[in-house]
Length: 338
Image 1 (tube, rainbow, N blue to C red):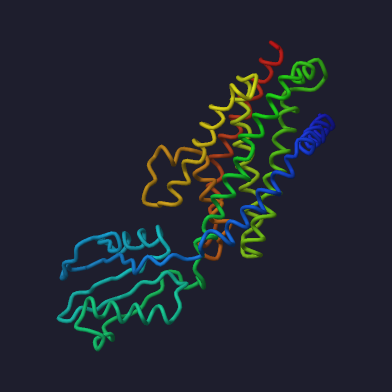
Image 2 (spheres, rainbow, N blue to C red):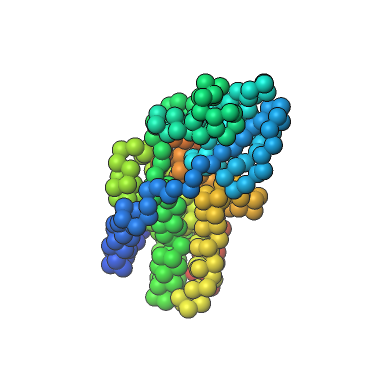
């Protein structure tokens, strides 16, 4: 069985090489690197964003886009985790309010002093009372802010390293149907599981190739490459297995084009919640690519996120196993019927 799986892997890698899959992956990775480096800015000035917790409600401020009012310290920290540009403000009751500033951890001393002066003018009688303003660091281990262009890296890894198979699996499966490869394979000692494993391993290799070209170019050695490798392997396993289910229903690319695009857009929905953390309805959290994207963020920025959550990978792994089983059943049925 192992020899047959290895033979299928070698066969699919050769097909991928002849179909320029490897060249496409390398080209896209280098193109994304140029996009991150020269097109997407590393910082956008949005002005000062504050989340305010007024313990005794001694002040009255209208909530706005750059000013969020919360009712507890826990809510303040939750809001700060949604956007690394936000600074926390805790107001304590007294004749002259004592202000506590809560920073993310990457801010420079100059930024902290400027913010301290600005807040003292806003909440007290002016800069002379800046001694009433104290500073706390939410994550003292954080030493730098994530530039905006690098913040897009997990999204690009999801779209290519994980979802690359959505388009290419359709193309390879339909090509095999046209050439009756599936039907011919069923008269050999090999099994459908072995044939499909060859495709899954091919696209995991392509995903890792993309990841290990783009990530070092963007982040150098800062990423957690061990965890990143595991995330890409599991993500690619799920996406390829799920796509193989749909690929069994179509005989040519014109039939598969619309469902292929729908599948890719469906898997990409969690990107909305990544870019707008406050928006994460249940329906998006149930898509297996949501925990994959969060895990990619943790793997890419371990110095910012902190410890990684290995449990994030359990759900997509289970869904990938179920998808692979169903794809094997459908593949066998179609091959025998064909």
